[in-house]
Amino acid sequence: MDWLFFGEISLAGLAMGGLYGLIGLGFVIIYKATRVINFAIGEIMMFAAYLFLAFAGGMEMSPWVALPLAVLGGSVLGGVIEKVMIRPMLGESSISVVMVTIGLASILVGLVELGWGADPQLLPEFLPRKPVFLGELYLAPKIAYGFLIGATLLLVYLLYFRFSRGGVALRATASDQAAAYSMGINVRRVFNLAWVFGSLAASLAGVLVAATGGLSPQFGAVGLSVLVVVIVGGLDSILGALIAGLFIGWLETVAGAYLGGQYRMPATFAVLAVILVLRPYGLFGTHEIERV
Amino acid sequence: MEALLEIDNIEVVYNKAVQVLRGLSLRVPAGAIVALLGSNGAGKSTTLKSVSGLLALEDGAVTAGDIRFKSRSMKGAAPEKLVRDGLFHVMEGRRVFEDLTVEENLIAATYALSGRPQTFRDSYELVYTYFPRLKERRKQLAGYLSGGEQQMLALGRALIARPELIMLDEPSLGLAPLLVEEIFTIIARINREQGTAILLVEQNAAVSLAIASYGYIMENGKIVIDGPAEQLTANEDVQEFYLGVGGQEGEARSYRDIKHYKRRKRWLS
Image 1 (cartoon, chains in turn orange, yellow):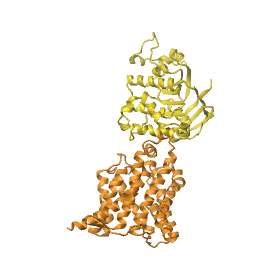
Image 2 (tube, rainbow over the protein chains, first blue to last red):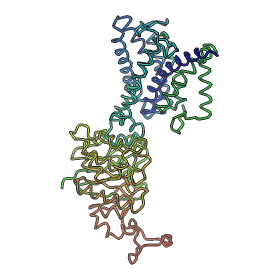
Image 3 (tube, rainbow over the protein chains, first blue to last red):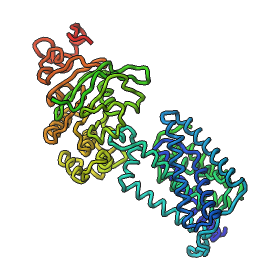
Image 4 (cartoon, one colour):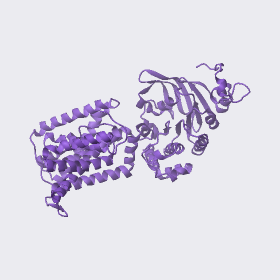
């Protein structure tokens, strides 16, 4: 076995996994605060990536202006979705809300095809192109810098939720909604912010992933890998999303390199099946099973 | 005297089908402790939830009557607005945020101060002077506190909000008699020192009437008897049905006799 090759593949996989963790975090924030399983997270990523394409490609802005704008656009989209589509569903059964997010995913795909067509596109290059070496291991620069940017946001989120007053409000709402109301916390606003923050994480990850692998209206299928990540990690566990993200990213890449690209998804879904049998609530989730 | 809270003939219906309150009225004067007593299912908690606006979360609605806080109608106001206006509801079963630390639980309560210029630090110190034990445990997860400490935390969160009225839903629930006494002593102290009015919902009539100045007793969704605490304590029916004192000679009754119990309550419910 070629250990150098294995090391490089693993490194690339872990870097990709970091981005999965970021998307998973976006998913978990929304789930934790509002108990909504958001199947449209992949499409929100895609939408933000197309926004980046429009700003940096079509309107020829500097990518470093286009990136924050696209991420901002994605978060606003999340906030609007919550206000217009999710809030009226408050009190409905969780399966109805899930169906709304699935429908929303189709709408977003349709909108993107209307605007940009169905052909795959390449994002303008914006990350440094100098090869990155960790010891002897080579890492594609796009992946390396993508990971760095993603990890920075991840760290900011973790610190915010742990130490800020807003983070306390979010965790309090997640822990006991009625009690949060009785503390004077504006729970509806927390719901809205959870969608904004969750979509923000997904949007940034969307642009970074699209920058390495190209963009098409089918890009939202990444959301499927992320679903595996959050189920393996536990739907309501931020730590679980990070660890499972790294692991699933690594597994996908290694399986793709050694067994061939067609084995990427089967490998992760096999892991998912095993985890579901052994720990139905995920590796770090609370022991309470959500049926969808 | 001007009442801080006035509940005027309200009716509450859950799920558009189940009527729980049938024309209930009560008033809490500023700075007073008022006890609301009654057995299981009488509608005590529903009364508090209809005041604090948490009723909507359980698909309940106030269908008739009016609720006035500081002489303004509060029917249908958002729960967080009421809290920020000075009305704090300590829910039944303590409801601390179990996966947050004690300190974070108190931080969460500072949202009640939104829109009021207050320094949070003084508020924390105030809580710790009433409950020194919380200070020792402030870095611990609230879920790992004992029942008594959780009740202290629930009261502490109310103190943070500097309310004019605290509504307490069964603070004695699941606590040992000694702890109940300790908690009630502190409740009386808070009332005396902070001037906070307290609406106390309880099943434990003896301790409640000991610290309250006025009491209401409810059955089946309405008030059946009310009066100053001493008067209620002296009332023969209240003694028998709520204080566990025997019909004859004022002795405590044995459970064996209750089987043969025949006498009807003198009030109509």
